[in-house]
Image (cartoon, rainbow, N blue to C red):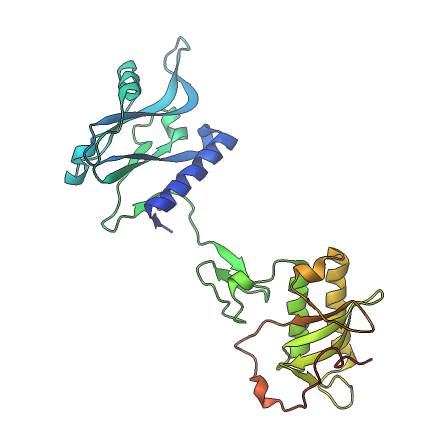
Length: 303
């Protein structure tokens, strides 16, 4: 990929390259620098230093690995560009005296330094990145290994980051479960929907040592969970129970609240929860199922 970036994103990229260079060393890291000024400012000189040195002669003398950038602010809009040179005593003196002046429009110069090649004496190791006609800065194009960021949906589908809705199941990226129990809630719902695609929620009893699904709903209407008369069988219900049970064992007591489970008032237990299954555009329409609704909580729960 060969991406281009807005100035704000270029600043973020610059900050990240500098953090990486500080952590791993400038000798193996490219850095990006943003120099700010004004359209009517006098020329300024800026020293970009790596803290590295290089040997310059057979006597073993060393000099800093650094560059001087001179910016002609008043002529940038006429097509001029910043210039890069080695760091001399005169350049350092000019940099100390440089000050951005004027009250004109804000301007920025972006510099890309490849320190590894600069240390070897390359005269092409520093680039002034000029913005395109639409104001975007192409940095590292066809040079760095840019690739699209991705996210993994709970259903297992891999998606490009800018695609915020899963192609396979319709899950929104920002609502994608983040905790093990959140993932398990989705998986339990998918398991139940194999036999009852209209299922939208369930009641789960955590009283005792095990999680147990005691009711399944399509909207506010209960789905029959009896073997002989309803769509479910014991194996499917038991599989969903086990999915939730394993996640609860992994996360501990506070997991239901973190996963967004709703505590349901009940006279017989203080650990009855309603869990909601994420909607999916690929499931059959629930209104096709006609069942008698249950009374409001807590009378709807039976053993």
